[in-house]
Image (cartoon, rainbow, N blue to C red; front, side):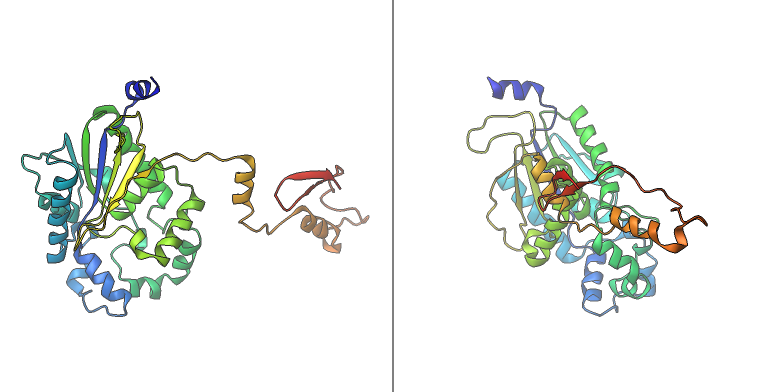
Length: 319
């Protein structure tokens, strides 16, 4: 049957459980800074690299709650355990409380590098890098702060992790503790999220914060149909839950890599207004400053007719 063929060709783990670390010192300090208060950003704390942020008391409670929910709703034991090497992720992994677990500390799972923004409060960033923040706001998927990574860059590291899981842990259950922006990278790659869709997802999250990844948040991908038990070759279902302080009901959602018709592609393209066109170049060619002494243009005008672009983005008759 088709399902049997899927199982035979599948190379991913049966279940992949992603856990965001609990609330860290940095999360707490940034929360205050977002509200105009930098008193937690002491000179001592400012010298600490972000990789060394510890969990707060609430962060440890979130980790315990995440571990409890996983044991009650997924499994008490995994075949493989991975964590980012950042202190807050390792501390979260330890407090999940999986008896007998042996954790792999993975460099590729470290947080997205924020470059010159790293280790600075939100107030500092706004004061020192306002132009950069505006550019990141416009083009968050592809733009990186100097010395740092873009979302697209971080997705390359996620691909390395997924390749490791495919090669070594096919058909097994794996848990990964890492960072919100790396979990976003897993979502981008596993759900085929384009830059356009990623930006829309961020807008939706601003309108409804519950759509975001909270500290201690859990994302589960599965190859197993939650209703029939049939196993497929790739991840077909996912669910999302934040167990602290009280877990919301988790609902399984289908996972499908999207494809696009030509009209779909142009619908995405037309969301971006065109700024420069050939008619602008014609005006420049005809400007007196761009002509030779004999009056001919410095840049010869193309002689071929140009097609008309309709409102739907498709080319029509030549004009």
